[in-house]
Image 1 (cartoon, rainbow, N blue to C red):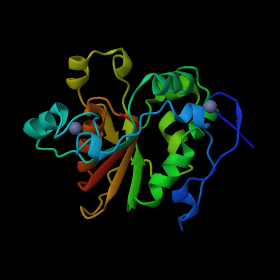
Image 2 (cartoon, rainbow, N blue to C red):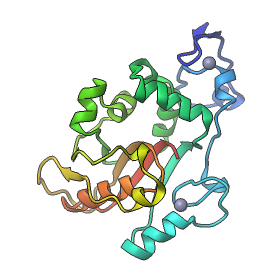
Image 3 (cartoon, protein in one colour):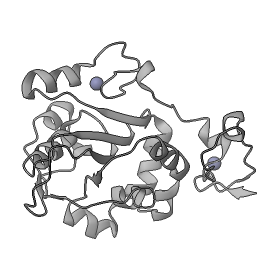
Length: 226
Ligand SMILES: [Zn+2]
Ligand SMILES: [Zn+2]
């Protein structure tokens, strides 16, 4: 019997056919089936091939904008569509600071990490003031048990949090990241950059530009939700 980290109900986990016949390790789930049914799994086949935006048959407007304006081809993957469940989850996790919820999607993240390999893995950090306010860095906390994380970026405090901005304010926010040090990396290095939620791609774009400055150009990005 397991206890769902989200709703606290006891549940027993039934292996899927795929898991029974799989040679990969099987990870325990922290999320019960009732909660899991409320998720909207994403893939490149039911969304934008560059960022997994759902219900887009080709390449979405945001990805076209980044390509036209900055010559950037997004290479983003995401597990779940942003919906009411994900919204409530992040509210509990980030706004109310329930740190135990960092592990809610551990199984999904571990499974994804099995089939996606990188030379270097880093993440979008919280700004110092947010981290102090909350007591932890939500992105680091969510991924550090899954990946070996190398901190590379620092977030400079912005005028107001992303969540309080409208779409055009978000798209036009100035650069907010810089690198921790100026050690140069080879451009061959295959980097994974992690974030929690992907909205317009602006945050990730800025972080990528900061990483370009230390030689990292082969950058893949991932978020739990988008
Ligand atoms: Zn549950
Ligand atoms: Zn897209």
